[in-house]
Length: 272
Image 1 (cartoon, rainbow, N blue to C red):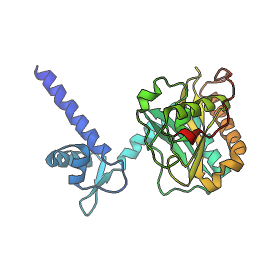
Image 2: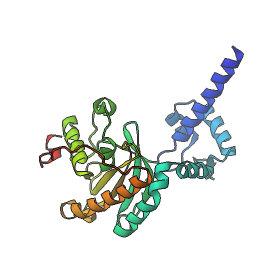
Image 3: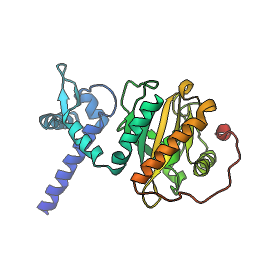
Image 4: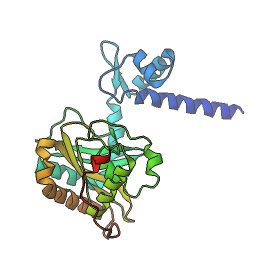
């Protein structure tokens, strides 16, 4: 019984330390009281864990006594990314795509009901003040998410109520299903100001050797630069061709989906 209790105590300590680290997913440094609130811990527990994590190099404290994530986590994050097969296959091609188009090139995998960014390269026409790598975005409001939802069963249960982020966000499951069916037919997905105003995106699914969708590649940037009404054909061709090259490196060389009739061309947001 003592061994079991000790193991349970150790697991709880790890869970609490993980909760403390996850409190730093937003921008800026945090005080102990803020960390405790975000992690759901008592202030004394949060303070003790922060002190231990600081000694390990996982958090750093500034002159004002505020904490931020430590540089040693970059080493772990780099090792995790370099060991990920999708990151290994897609990184160089995504970087080249960003350089050639001037747009942002992104690679994401699905983690539950969110898209998790593995790669983010900024083109000179689509600068950002922050890196997307490691961030999560909702599946239903992004082009990446619509590609990642291909072949996912039980989408309604997975996503639940679809949150509205802008007036253009799809909030109706039937409309979302129609959008995903269009992805299966045309080979790529689009999104215009569904997550944030002024930004648009195209994405294509990435598949492993079995044909299963394991990630997605996108081009994104200001709506005025992406210009989907005028450039959809050009940019979708680039995204799909780059995705095909990445798929080959992931071991996928054959056809992806069975041929299905083209869906009617109508505004998929009209019912959202």
